[in-house]
Image (cartoon, rainbow, N blue to C red):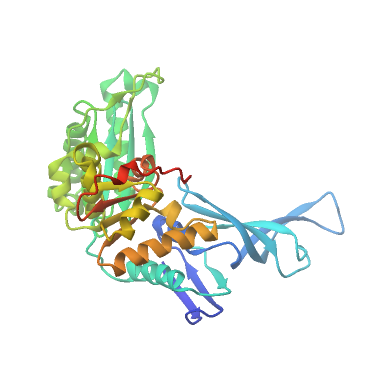
Length: 387
């Protein structure tokens, strides 16, 4: 995230001009922009000419929207902001509702009535992550199945599927055509994997496909004299997996769970010092305790709050959907909980909706905790809160 202009002070009204540079930045914007903010950006609209009502043309204009809602589209890394236009122009009336699409490399202004500490912290984290060399390991995962492949990038708590490659029907039958599929995956690898950012590439999938592709990748790199791949071949690792058969797919493909990658000891050792590695490791610890040592963990709003009242929380795990909930009272509740746990000497980890561990955390209501000491009677409390 690049901060172009800044004109605000803590707990006061102010404006920033920013531009998203990476897919993860758009996700951070989703967390930064809230209902009531004003977003100003250039856009285009189709308008009818006064001289000829039957003729329409696109014109460039600027909209100032007071945000009523926003939607994040993870597949395209686009944030759609909906709101009421505050300033009229010759094409758009004040008070009319419109939508702005905030994308990478598209600057815009954000005005907040109050820049609270959490908004300032979110902006600071976003801009610092882009301007400094983070020690966090960004990870690329290539999922190779018999007739299709996907490339995922994991970093800053976010999982983004960059692309999906499918083999043609001919490549299912002819071995020579199967090399076309491998070349397509190779081209996608070259496009999306940058070893200046990505610390590790994991190739996973069913059967022998991961090993076959790694061999092909290095062979093509030598043939094309792509030294940047050859010099980093030690960072390209293969993990075995047991992909589940997809009975709903008559092509015989397989479903693949990214969590399988992180069951591999070698992969976890590679990312053990990163934020992603910490988050996955802590969640695994929590999940193991739920199964084997339930007195040392709790989950659900009431159970977690009760444990906190007893100063028993060692590590709090909470989903971003709760921590940055659009309902003000709920947001205040969980922001306050995170702050209080940290002030009490505990740790708190916020898991984004696109984190690989979040689906399982959601099964535990979205909020859970590892305890400093056992609380065997805690589970007797009825937790009928709806998350």
